[in-house]
Length: 355
Image (tube, rainbow, N blue to C red; front, side, top):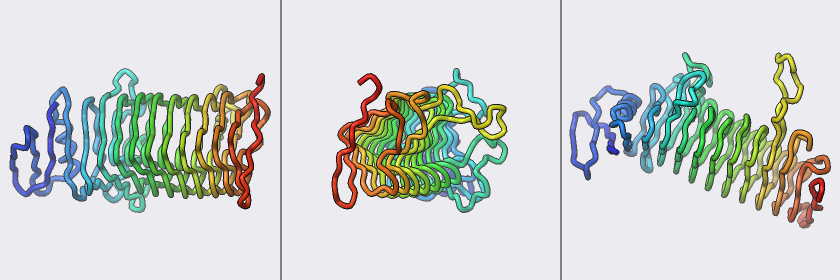
């Protein structure tokens, strides 16, 4: 695969840097055009684009819609969405309203970038001509085998990073998601995602939003704090696991787990959507402290949700209870501790039905 280095010079200059091609840019060419042309001109087998440190204002989204591409920067590489652009900073995958699952792209890496969505100077979260696209700093639509490493996603008019439309095998590591208008991390209709060593804080809505047939996801070694709503909102998920997370000082619940209901205007408005609950999801070795609601709030039932557990977690000084009341058999709890006024109290284990 060919490696392309992007640098901004006033004149064209080619430098032999260990076999890599250095692409210079004429004065007046936009940063987005510079990056986009480099992606589009890679050979069929793909390659790597390197963006040196500097501030790059984007007059539109950078679109990766081919396989085998690496887009990376270094400390000090900042991509800022321009005023009133109303697009993602980076779109990975299809920009169609309904992406074709047979045309997914694969093997993409995004690394060592700071992405600023410039939310205060966007008058809408919607793309001006393709309103199904939102102003997320990274929007992922129908992509397999994606790595996101050491990326700082903030101030998006919509969400920090959003994956949807049947993505598979995404690895997000060492990254932060903060000060976004909606959620920090949003994952929908995807399978096989790992998020580790991350920060998710001070987002206007939830820290994490998980929904729409999401399955086989693990969050580990993370801090989720000071989000305006709950730290974690989840429904219609299977086998989503939360391990070693510090969840504190969020405006509402530490975690809110539910099933779906049909929206306003639907012929079945406010009725439960079948098979839309939480199944085989777990919290292990997590701490829930100083949250504005329950530590964990389950707004579902054993008829709609099953196989969920909370094991070895700490609950301390949440405004409401450690775990909201749930019907017998809905939830397994073991080895959890609740702290009130300096006292540590083991939470009574609730066995599942049949145990």
